[in-house]
Length: 266
Image 1: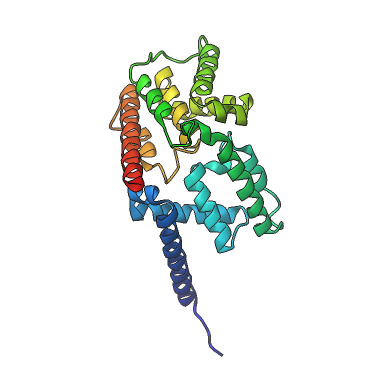
Image 2: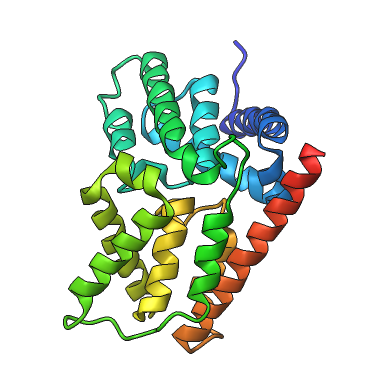
């Protein structure tokens, strides 16, 4: 009887994993060329690997379901499964693992595209042309915004003002997700800032804005490695300077994305 040793099994598994990564990376190059261009193959393979691991934790093992999960990481943010704005995602993902994964994947797919269709007006002109002018203008205003220390004396007023600011810039998304979820995101931004020594109102506003647009899991998102690197950069001792670097990097990434999108359209 032919016996396969554990080392041989491990080798076969590694080959299968690499083949899946190759197929998925080729797929992402076709359907998410901007992500692949900005991040490069090495980082996108990290995205694939994390997506595979996370999807398995939710009972998705079929290749089409795993790839769907990775696609929605690219569309909704790498941490969409715990995003306070996307509670519907957690509800579907955490259904009993015994449930048919394809049917569950189909429900997730339909629900995700319903969400995307509802929020897309915030990122398009009335004629449907993609436009992120409001987001860019919001970031530029933060450059010279006040940076008061956040504490019990002004937390309520800041919370209210930041929610109002998000509703003004992203009215469709705020209306769709509802006030309670926007409040949860603001609290998450305050917590994220505190973990990295950022407690000023300007820094928290920047983090909340990035979370709102890119996903609340930005501290650990393999699609946003520059955010984690900046937040954890201990060579920058002053929190305000770390916020400045995060701000400049956000604008830089946005410009590179626009340039690529413009070349792709032309």
